[in-house]
Length: 268
Image 1 (tube, rainbow, N blue to C red):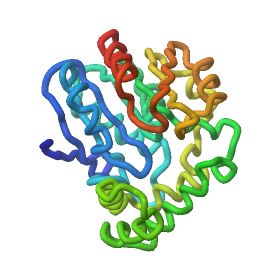
Image 2 (tube, one colour):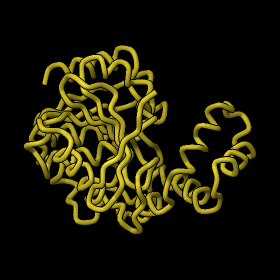
Image 3 (cartoon, rainbow, N blue to C red):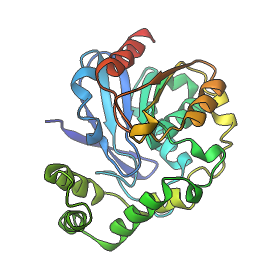
């Protein structure tokens, strides 16, 4: 339905789509272990009023792989290059999970190119925890094992069928296809706490110069943004509105929450 395009950013092939051609520019950045298609449920609503671009981060989806270059600074550099070459006016960036962390870095490094941020349930545990001490470590270990062991979507789907027999078959197939497009080094970088090398995690949110909508999922449903981390960020980001979703864990907004996101996009 959407035509995939590409741009060479700093020597890395970056895959992206445009979901519309008019309105204020909106750039979508997915989470770790995902790809641009994760935003498909939101594209019809967002594309009504925004010129939407959805990118595959390096090491994900149709974008290129670069050995041991999956730090936050590497992802942010690609997005900054994309903004410079493809979008002539300041853009809004909507990042989910890892994409939210990337969006924060881009806003700090290239403030003239960013007019606002939507930060979707970013895992910000690392201001006081190592990844190995977080609830995310074991899932990352399993994901890295699967990506390193199995080379095709079919093999990954067979593994998941045995491990998660009650998962919806369609969801399992789609997840296996997405996983087959991920460089295992992406996950290793996060597991080994190399993602934020050269970043002061306390200073970064304080330096964001634009309006921010910070979205927290429901912790009881699997939110990545803990209550203490949401407060930590909201207190430090200068222009921050905190949206707590009751019906969603670590996922995309729906219903009233999506309406709040659309209202934020309209207002900046």
